[in-house]
Each structure stands twice: as C-alpha cells, then as structure tokens.
Length: 306
Image: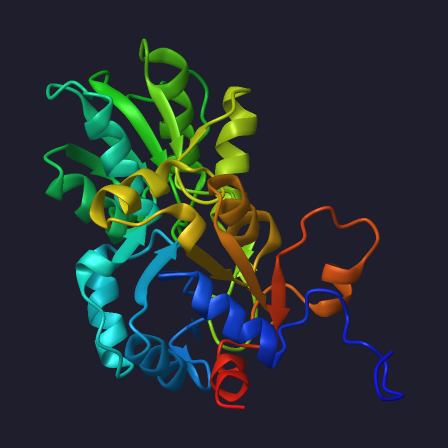
C-alpha cells in the first residue's frame, strides 16, 4: 500500500509498466477478434494505439486464428476499417495450414478436402494445392437409406478443418471417411478455439467445435497449426529479423493468445475487450497468467502519455 492507497492487482498495466514494456520490445503481435475488432466493428482506440506504436518505431504484426479469410481478404478488411495493414504483416491459421503442407512436401498429386470457408481455399490454392469441399458442400445432403454407400475422392491426402458456418453432416462424413479410409491422410486443424467474436454483439461457436466433431468421429487428434501451436512463429521469425524475447503478444484469450506467447518466449499482454473477463483471469483455477493485463489496447495510449 502506497500513500494510503491499495496496490494495483499483480500484472495490471500501469504507466511505468507500459513504458517498460514498450522499451523492452521491438514488435507487437496482435490477435484480431476481440482485440482489434468484434465482427466488423472496430474496437475503440485501436487506430490511435497503432499510430502511437508505429511512431515509436515498433513493428506491428497481426496473428489470427480465424481462418475464414485469407491474408489478402484480411488486408482488405483492415482497409475497410481505416487501418493500413499489408498482407506481409498478417499471419492467419489458414495460411499456416497451407504452409504446413508445403513445408512437409505434401505430394502434388494429392488433394485437400476443406471443412471451412474461402480463406482456407484461397491460401491452399495460392500454395499450389488442389482443393475440394468448402462452402459449396454446405448445400449437400445425405439420405440415410438402406445400403447407401458414400462415395469420396480417394486421392484426398489431407483434410483441413477450420471455422465453417456451413458445417453439416455431409462435410463431417466426407472428412471422416477420407481420414479413416485414405492411407496416410492427414488431419489438420487451423485451431481449436471454442468460441469467437464473429459479430460485435456476442460470441459464436469457434473452429474448435467443428474440429471436435470430426475428431470424435475418427477417434483421432488433429495436427493444430494455429495458436497456441508455435508453428506460426517459424514464419514470423523468417519474415522479420527479431528475437522472440523482443516481442509482445497481445490477445484476449488465455488458452490461445497468451499461451502462444508463452510457448514461443514472447512477453504477453492480455486485453479484456474480448473473450476473457477479469474474474476468469483472477480465478484460482486459472493456470495461464499473462505478464500484464489491461482493458483494451487503447490503454497503452493514455498510459504512455502520462
């Protein structure tokens, strides 16, 4: 207790902590949903925070588990919200899935079945892979009649599962049968987030719900390429000449963003503008603790100007 006032909670971002953080890092890695925006609504103070950090010479990188859009599509979304962010500054789980296959020398004669949306399809095609599935399979149905046999493409060598608002029984069976019956077929998940801010009004089921359904049906765990897996960090380090100890991961989820930062040796800042609320952070059962936390990225502006 100082000056008769109670000490701030452990880890709370103060003016001194904000200055120390900015002085100790060269790059800020931002999650998007719940940190930069909710749905298509920009979170208050984000432009000011980004402008200040860029003026201070900090590199800004955006690392999202949301696979619905490609890097090109996300760059357009940033621009529509008045933010100038290049494709090279964006790292998505859809991009990570494509790069995982490329780095592991996925056979060119094999195809990829996608349980997901256009972002995954676009990144896979840009990487040179032939795809099937995606949104167009959202209109396909199955009639469970006697002796019905489900036909599938036996050249599918990987199934990629991500967030999919068109998820249905047909897709689940196609994914299941490829993984179960095609020899060596890979099962890849973009991420396992249980929920996400798909709109500004509320949370919605995340990719983890689709992954769980497929995983249950095949009784097999997927290869996860998005946060908290460290796979994306390999590309960050190749793209930017930075040390992980000189990076700060800013996110709204303990089990993905903060854990990703901790797994890769970054400093971590939790913002309470998205999925994680203060009671969850402070709950005795929580085992994931960020270095610092605050209400939103806008707090950096006020604290750094004190």
